[in-house]
Amino acid sequence: QVQLVESGGGLVQAGGSLRLSCTASGLTFSNYNLAWFRQAPGKERELVAAIRRSSTYYEESVRGRFTISRDNAKNTMYLQMNSLKYEDTAIYYCAAKPFSSGNYYLPGGYVIWGQGTQVTVSS
Image 1 (cartoon, helix red, strand yellow):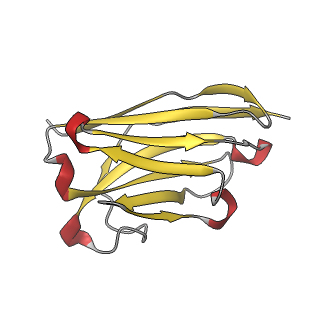
Image 2 (cartoon, helix red, strand yellow):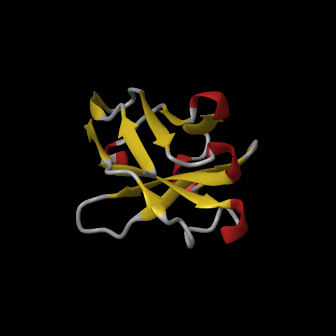
């Protein structure tokens, strides 16, 4: 069974840091583009960061504050979030798509999703 499981969300004050993890099972992890999306209340889900092998993409509002990485040996992807802002509050989802499903920095084609983890930043 293909599965992605996020962890690491929580409540943090503005300016603080969190690290999200996404562990995969049931797929050949190294053959997939990986991404973090988020959805805030009343807003559409947006692509936050993505990674293909060592190439990375960041949405403009998080560039310089967030770092995406992957450890293929552990079937795990990470999102290090620093200098968190109130507007980063959202449910964060990890997602995967095969390399053959298009460019990793485009939101389309991500077909495997985790259940989401809540990140709340207090102002």
